[in-house]
Length: 76
Image (cartoon, rainbow, N blue to C red; front, side):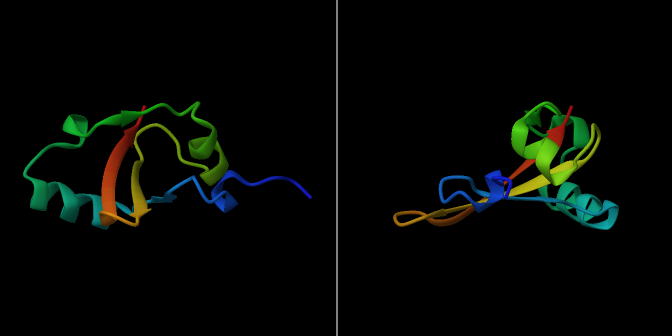
C-alpha cells in the first residue's frame, strides 16, 4: 500500500479548481490569476493531485483556533 500525503493529518486539503471556479474567485478577489501566490509543480502534494502549471489549487486548512482557512495558489 502506497502512502498518500493527502491522508496525513498535518497536510491540508488540496483541490484543483475548475475554470469556472477560478473565474469566480478572481472576480471576488479583484485580481488576475498571475497575482495569486505561487506553488511549484514539483511540490509533492501538487504532483499527487495531478495539478499542472496554470492550474489554481484551493487549500483548506483546519485549525482549532482559527476554524477553517482557505488559500489559493497558482501552480507554476
